[in-house]
Image 1 (cartoon, one colour):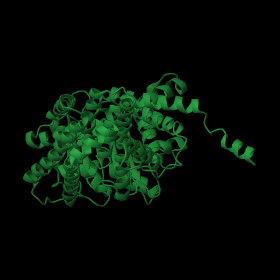
Image 2 (cartoon, one colour):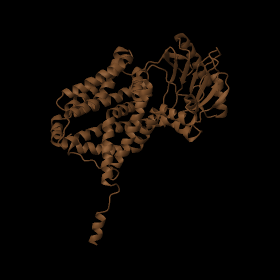
Image 3 (cartoon, helix red, strand yellow):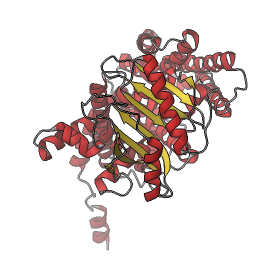
Image 4 (cartoon, helix red, strand yellow):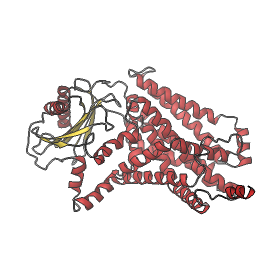
Length: 509
């Protein structure tokens, strides 16, 4: 009997210890190498989930449109956009985004590839363009998440690579912690802060695992899309990237610049609705408008599909050119249509957005605590890195401050050109300031208080510009959420810090 017990006790673990150690080393190396990038992408991505709400907060006097546009209203929007583009000297491509369950505005964009001139307008439910769109801070947040304000191709590639690193970290993290699921509800409180951080890191990683995998995978695919198309071109189209793009994005406009009438978009929409009676207008993209080579991509959304819309292709005369297949096409096409809504949580209404926001915040915390744990282990092993502890505190708590400072600068200066420079300056100053402080604890406390103060400044400047109760109730809700976040940040900085510092110095970070 005793021999049987000993044999059971000596049962080999599911994963060999050597394999677990190798995975832990790989997990740490990936986290350290990409930590700052992953953190910035996760933090900005959490904000980007609510991008359409931020648009409404920045410009709360714009029309709110709750129903899909009629075909005639879409035609009126296209006509108005064409007139605005003519006046601006940017008659080339026009894009109209209609209201949908995710956002409640009619957004018009036109641009000219050669001159670089572009314009953004907002329209009402009749299709009348009523005001230029002016949301520089929201656009800053979106571009920070999508391509880090780098040249677009390189930025997308780097963000895609960050998604790959995050996914790899998730896999290696699972394999390096065999008891991760068994200890899914173990939270040690009151002891060493390092153990608290480790439990928080592991629990948030497990509880949000499906979300983390989906978001990192879709982010990697979206970011590396150019590379994927390049590989597809080499593999299936003998290196012809234009054919590869056309197979994914649909037919492109030709170079025939002969003048032609505006396309009859209303008739195209009705043609789609004749085939799909429950389809509602989502968007229209007209390439080389009013030219003989123009092509029209009409986006229509039908219930029961994850894709935000399916695309139908027409030439300038209204001739049917095909169906994008994002709703009912091949598995690959349907996956393509699902990437963006799955990545940002832009499906299922506002409740899904709230869930994505909370899980995105959890992913941000997982990233932050990962580096904190690694630094604490160094300290516990007698190899402290105090300067790196301060630097990480400057990154971790300096980014919310930098993003909020951009909003403050834009509300004061009303010039989009100050956004990136403000962000870079505040990022550098917060890291340098953290290095100048006695320790990471003091740096984090000061930066949390500063971030909360910046959020309060945002609310105050917004109220000065639009009133305490702006026309759009969503703007009021966003300001209230910012106020709650400011209270949490300032409150955490004002916790009885002597006791907290004594516990940190006694037990390690």
